[in-house]
Image 1 (cartoon, rainbow, N blue to C red):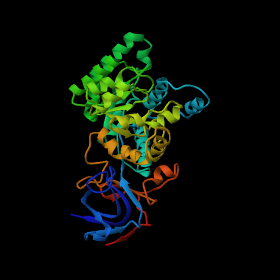
Image 2: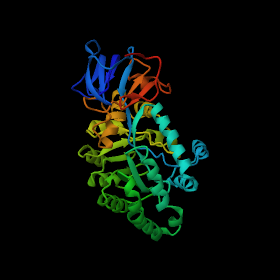
Image 3: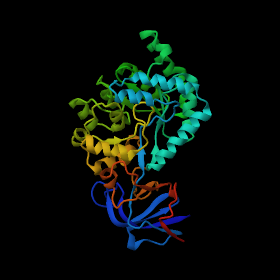
Image 4: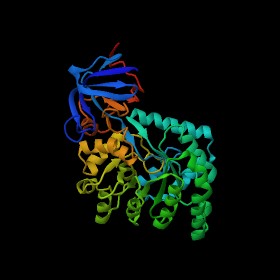
Length: 402
């Protein structure tokens, strides 16, 4: 059994109220011990037990690794021209997804593998240690299945999103084509995708799938053993929140357009409201009102929504800064939402916090406090990202003694 003792943590965020102050469980002048990739001890640095290795973090802040519970990493192609057009006044709709579908279908397995590996490296550099990713840019049986098979090599949190939009070859036939596509998604496509998926998702919104279609698709996935989550209320309120709560979805994602009843439903449920401020930033859309959700008692998560069209970012600190500036979250609330909130959106209790027995997934900041993540927007403050008790990017600035 190998152990590592970490000394002189200036500010340690545990997200465990029993281990420190406030809902972030913050400790000053802290130390921790890692054994076999798990947190084994937390206390004052001066009382740090002996271990096989000892590292001095020299007063830096340490936070749980970010948990990105909503991303779309399985794609090919580029939509920078679409972004530029939006910034000059063109509106966003779900139609741009079809551009990425064409590029993804044309890409080789090697190209898709290289792209997800590049994006994961970016995520790790920004402090993300756990991430979910969806299919949804294949929209046929073969390309949805291969996208998920590739994604499953990199994360256990894979989501079948065959119901992203109705692809052009079906949409051209109107309502009958949409019905045929739903039948494909709930039939052969689901059969092929289920082996590589943990979750099932539907884009339930204007221009995508109706509440009735989404219910049919999610129930088919549940019958196959997949767990439900839902794109809800990004472009319009068509009743998707009620469906998410009805089916006990782990998360309702976007939540841009919410009624008072929607907020009450979320607050009284196990469904996390996952907010994706990168999408509003990139589409110049209204931001969701995180303050109303939090004050009502709903559980809120933040995620990057990394995708090539409407939120092409892998930076969780960037999303936190937007949430604080534009969505009326406090810096503490934003950090919790990007860590523990994301874990709840994935129904995980081993990540998103640094309680005893949790995975030793954490981020060392080149700053004395987590407040600097939103206080200094756009500045790279990620000193090291640790996954399962090991640094992904060793940094000689930290002193190690054996």
